[in-house]
Length: 279
Image (cartoon, rainbow, N blue to C red):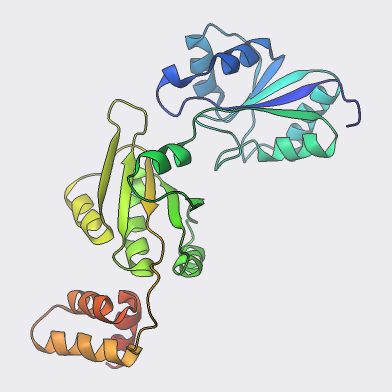
């Protein structure tokens, strides 16, 4: 350590239920000289609830590096700062990482004040094996990057956990199905809030469910990892031929590719693309 006089506290806050706020988190926020927040409006509401009044500064992914360095310098000069996100632990798919890095590089003491986080909450109550899991956070909004990442993950045997916003849920479920096939999933919604819900179903069932129901709230998706199976003896040509056979019998192309994918182990999109190339 370089002997810097201040300290940065990384403070976890409730992901929904304010009763999950820890005594220590309340004390640290009360004692801090200033607070860096993802959204000052959200944090001001939290502080008001607990009777705390402190200087608040925005600190999110759009904050200029110069401003973040300014916060770090104030801490180096002896101030005590707490960094919070809108919900859960900062730096876990939330802002705060840049401030922590700069403070570490400057030799400033950084201390955690653990609190709730949606990823471990979902892992604990999803009803699926989560002894080993891979947390992916939010998938890229860029289609190409998203497809590439899912392709990298399709053979991962860990349980996979994703965050998703309601307006993108339908597209994400379809992307997961196209990449992974029809795996089991737990769809965790509004964790710790009044309308908390955990639905366990296959990805295809989830797609159908949300065709009929509008997604609402914040989601955590828990998807089973790749199964340990014997090497398939089927080829992509076999899958294409099976899909074509089903189409000749009157089945729609998308459903035929889905059935052929189940039989051969290839992804529906692979079979569909191969089938299209024959036209």
